[in-house]
Structures are given as C-alpha cells and as structure tokens.
Amino acid sequence: MRYKWLVKILFIIMTLAQFVASADIPNTKKHETYFSKEVIISDFDELYERLQKAHYDLYAHRDKEQFDKHFLKLKDTIKSQMTLSEATILFQKLASFANIAHTKVDLPTQDYSNYRQSGGKAFPLFIKAIEGKIYVVGNYSGVKGIKVGDEIIGLNKQEAGSVLDGLRQYISADTDTMFYGFLEFQFPMLLWFEHGSLEQYEVVVKNDKTQKKFILPTINYESLIHKMEKQKGLLELGFERKAKIINQVGYLRPGPFFNTDQNAKDVWDNTSFKKFIDEAFDTFVEKKVEALLIDLRNNPGGNNSFSDHMVQKFAHKDFKFAADFKVRVSEEFITANEKRLKESAVTETSENYKKSYEGLKEGDIFDFELTINKASTKVFKKPVYILVNRHSYSNAVTTAALAQDYDFATLIGEETNDLATTYGAMEAFSLSRTKVSISFPKAHIIRSNGETKAHALRPDIIIETPLVEYAEDSVLSKALEEVEARLGMD
Picture 1 (spheres, one colour):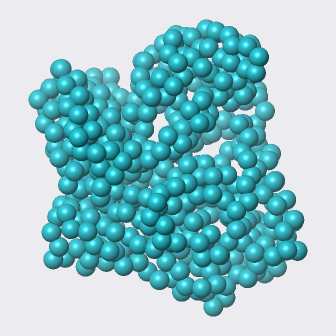
Picture 2 (tube, rainbow, N blue to C red; picture 1 turned 90 degrees about the vertical axis):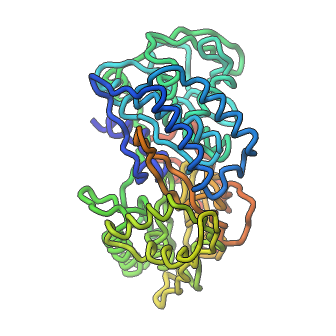
Picture 3 (spheres, one colour; picture 1 turned 120 degrees about the vertical axis):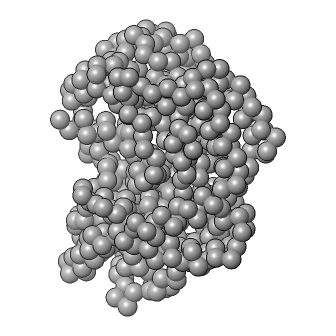
C-alpha cells in the first residue's frame, strides 16, 4: 500500500546524517543486552571528552560551564545498568545539548519500528510545530471535533511549550525552527520514547472560538494506514530522481546528493547520478525548454561532488561550493578519513584531506582548499529556478545558497529550516565499550557569499506551504505559475 511507503519516508527524511552516519542502529531483541552502571559511566565520560577534542566548536551555542553542568546532571541519572537503547538515548541527550544538527547520536528508531510492527499503539495525530505552537495536520484517532489547523495547547496535563521543551533533548538542531521541522516526522515516536506505551492521551485543543479537552485512544500501525488510505491522498516527496518537461518548463528533481542505487556499495559513488544529470540536461536542451525548475524540497543533502556537477550545467562563471571550509584536526577525524581511503572507491577528497592535515597536531585548524568548478562550455542558458522548503537540508541548502549568491538561479518556495553557513562535514567515532556511534562536525562551512552569521536561506520568491500538502502538489503548481509568468521578463 502506498501509505506504508509514505509513513516510512516520515522516518528517513530527517537529514543526510540519518542516512549515511556510520552508526549501527540497535535492534530491539527479545533478550536485550544490558550494560553495567560502570560501563555506561565510562562511555559517558569518554563521549564528552572525545566530543570536546574532535568537534569543530562544541561550545558555539553553549558555553563550557553550561555544558559541564548538563553533563554532570545527566551523569547523576545513571543509577543502575542500562539497555543499549537506554544508553543511546542518554548519550543523545548530551550530544543534542550542543544545539548543532550534526552533533548527534542516532536514536534507536528500530525499537519504535519493531514496537509498531508488533501491534504497538502510538499517538494518533500528525502535527506541525510553528513558532512554538503545535497544530493538527491529521486526525486518525476516530474522535470527532478535532480538525486540521486546530492548535494543541495541552498534552497529558502539560502545556504545549513544556511538551516541546521535553522533546527537544531527543533532537539535535541548531535552532528551534529546525527542531520544529524535525519534530513533524517524529512526534509520535518521541512521545513513545518519553512516555512509553499508552492506551490514550489527553489533549486540549484550541480553535478560533473555543478550547476543549479530548481523550484520544492510541492507534496501531495497520489502523493508521487504513485511515490514511481512506482520506485524500497526501503528497509523497521521497528520494526519487525525476526529469520531465511541463509546458516547456524543464522539471528536475535530482534527489539526494549521494548514491541511492538499491545495491550501491559506495554511498559516495556519483557515477549514476552524473549520468542522470547529463541525460536530463541533454533532453532539456534538445527539447528547447524555456526555463528550468530544480526541485530540492525535502532533500536531505549529501556531498558536493554530486551537487557541483549539477550546478556546473547552468553556471555561467567559475564557482566554489563555499567561501571558506575550515577543518579541525583530531584523532577521530584522521581515523575516519584513513578508513575511507582504504574502503572507498572514490578517494580524491579524502586524499586531499590527508595532504592538508599532514604535519599538523590535534586541535589545529586548516583551510581546506575547495575545488574551483569551471563554468561549462555548453552552459544551459535559459532561466533557472530552484524550489526549496523547510525540509531542504544540509548540502541541498548550501547548493541553493551558492546558486543564489552567484546569480545562477532564482530561489523560490519557503524559508529553509537549515542554515547556509553551518557546522558540518560530519564524521563519527564509536565509544569503547557500548560501541555506540557519535556523529560530530569537523568543519565550519562558510556560505559562498562569505557571510559568517548563520541564518535560514530565504527564497527570492516566497510560496507559502500549506499545513497539509496533498497529492496534487499545490506548491509545485504555484511555482510553475511563477516561472511561466516571468518567462517574458528574464
């Protein structure tokens, strides 16, 4: 059933980090392994110590005094043995305190998946969080009186703000706005992590006129899918790569900037991606399209060895992925890079990293020399538009930003949650005893216009995204209307 695929997408669309981090997400087993209190404390100490060494700037958003207090507070909660899942969540509560998206421990999402697949029940409302408020975008409870657009002001006798604060510790995000975006896809799962299995939730809902309390029974997976099937089709934006022509406008959905081939052995092998892009642009030129719309909505990002090849097709001058790319040397970074050199078929970037850090010591920062991409001799000369939304992340945002900064394209859509100047180029290390994988950013990536202050990417043409997006894709329709309206003006 098509909605089973959609529900899965709700779990995987988070960020590139969720897809490519080297963490092995633990499976829920009938007889789960426990770690002693001493082992958990040892790894918890190691986690904080190594993050301080390896991270580009762990204290960019929190000072060391705040971090030390939070570390000790969490450490004091270790009273006895823990399962791997419990330890993983504890470690994430420390990592997420940095308020940096790429400083993270992948949550044990497989536990929730197993729970749901075995008949476990979950919160029955889909939500969006906007400016600190929680809105209903889907009601699958069977309880009447709650409609799309209603505001949830209370949950299980907690005010909405307190609920958001409690769930914030599970998600790594640079800003509250970014957290709200991630929350859309994980709200029922995070409530399960926070409260465990419940038969019902008490919610207080407010609309324009009144507020009312409801008791909502939780819902199992099959019932959820059945109710979604009966409702109007929802928009499904996944990892597909698509190229077509719509009314003489080329439409390109490049998909993530990493290898999504089903049997891919190397996530950074861009061979098939380049072939797809080459063929798409050849078709656009051959069919003489009047403009091009590149759709980066819900794109988790990836590596610029993919995105640069796409941008090069319509770049009318030389360009760089970023204005500056500063990297911190650490044992964790070097170990990860050496592993890539041994195991990956695509090693050029790793070899350049190695040349850059040779002779340097831990803690040193170097400017990584970025490739200057030459303008194509057969550049696509028609107007280019790039469509983004709040769920364009990581390299997708950086790509859109450089296209805007170099005047290669006009940005269209809604403001992104992610930032164009960011802490990124994520690496990972495993803790000694639990083997939990910890992700961290080794670099400070400066937007291509040189702006060091981090903020969301704002399109040139704003198209508001509705609370609920249906299969007819009203945002894409409006974007195409905007492009077609401007064809005579470009």
